[in-house]
Length: 533
Image (cartoon, rainbow, N blue to C red; front, side):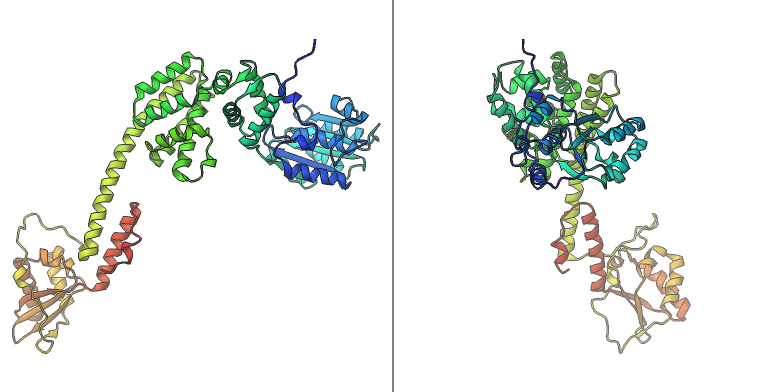
């Protein structure tokens, strides 16, 4: 009775041509073998299931093959057959996780001193080499740098950052890429065509999506699905893997957008009764939220999404229900929930609390967005008025005593300044303002930057004021107090008059200030800043 062999072992690549989606590596290795210019140490790095250990085994067979074919092992000679069976003593595979000490490295150095028994090269393949201790790495340094001519080292790791730079500098490094879903799906279809089951295109794409760029994971999932049904479709995949499916995920996302916590909790209860993994469901939620985030950020790049083509229309519809800030908040909450689930005794409760919190947060965020929109609308209206009429510079101090209810003294304003032959500048004007400031500091602040002219013949003191707000706040009572202050300083009595002349540069400065406030609130005022006041 034949023993069943797992698909990922049965369909492991045997030549460089069989390796999927790594042409930048396989081409280089084949050319080195063809030209007999192979290095003494290689480091293969990349995520799981991308072909690192497999490539190392193929390389070991190819450099020792008696009849290599275009850089590939022939698979027919005696050495290739023994290497396939794992009985060739000159190809030594070592698990770095369990042989990670100094003693194991010393044994390796001692064995490397002996010539190969049957092959041209003695090959050491060390898998998960990052698990070795710092002392073990230090013990490897000398033999990796200057090994015997018949010894080659092949290292494989998923965590390149844990490899010392002294090791990296002595190896040729090859980075294995994640395999694209389309390449994984094509390989799954090829495997299924040579087995006693069939797989639909949608199911192959779904498995490729779940495998996260790893061919070994994809073949393991396919093997699991084939045990459920001879015809593997998307329902078979969801049943075998234990995932909730996109319809359930989309339903919960709609409930969150509608801040309907009761409906979201009922969906979780239904999935829990079906024995769905709550952690996997939370991960599915985060994947779809990521897709929504990318849809809103890069709507013209659907290739960035991790979703089935048939689900794209629904995903776009759901994306309209979320703002970007809400998506980011929900995504952060779900990821934190996944982290807590790893330590919690009740994963369902963690997910339920997160969904309730999200439904409440969405309602709050919608209220905040409405208030923010109203503030922006008010600011836009204010800015439009500025662009039409200019702005009045804010006074340095606008508060007035509560007891004063005087109307503005409009009758004190003049339409045009009299001839300069009739008036002379009042040089003691700063002293007058200082005396007036003790009586009414609010109005005195509006006179900063003003100039005063007097006509002794007419008995008039004319102020040229650079603040339009002055005309609204200056009263007859203020005029009497100012006239009294002027009489105390000059010894003469004057009738007070004024004229408001706000310089254009003062208007521009005030407009710039308002525009800056508008930009800080998120308004687009790029064109407004170009218009003259």
